[in-house]
Length: 97
Image 1 (spheres, helix red, strand yellow):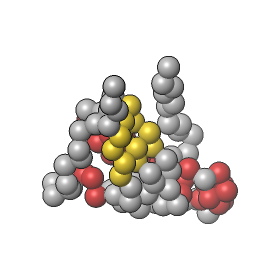
Image 2 (tube, helix red, strand yellow):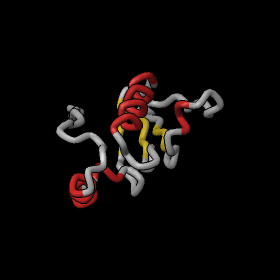
Image 3 (cartoon, helix red, strand yellow):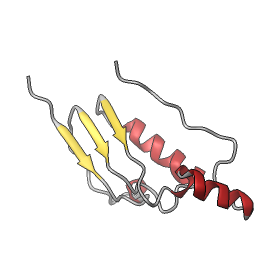
């Protein structure tokens, strides 16, 4: 049995543009960080919709240094300075059995 793993990174919200390259087919897709410019709620939602549209059976997403709202210290700082990200909202988790 062969398993095909596709790994991408550093898309920085470019995946929503029409000229973004096609993602190769595979069993597992890994996005290894920096899918956004700063990890704001709108960027995260668009990325999630895009990932959901891809045919890969399993998808793994690793937050990079640009996903600022995923870091508790940065999120706390954003709250103190009244910056908006995704306050009070959580991303769902799925576990692969």
